[in-house]
Image (cartoon, rainbow, N blue to C red):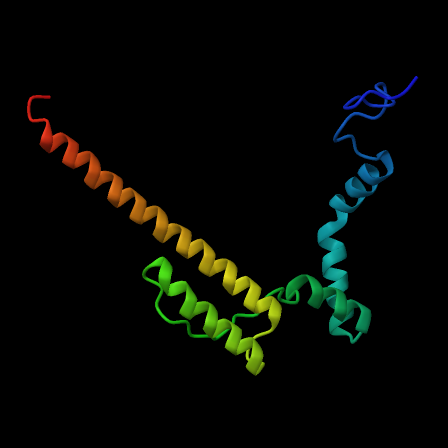
Length: 140
């Protein structure tokens, strides 16, 4: 019998969100002694244990995922200004001032900003039209 789309092959199987019993047991054991284990790791790090130092540094000061980018864009006040902004980004990538991934992230920020500008412009135009309709129908 073929499987039906959207149906589990084992409907009586493990329910969603069920946790492994061994994992739950280990979490409970560690939860009771977490503070003592943390203090011991810090003591070992202070004594010069490189593995303990690495562990403490990874937890206390994790590596940053993204670095801030010092990059100046021209003002974007209307959707047409996006051309100048993207030209600056492309030039910065070509000059090695930005990585391609940084440029992609900046482009996403610009896209969101332009959409917000377009939405604001649309709202303003719609409000003007609605006000004009009300003014042209004084009896309503």
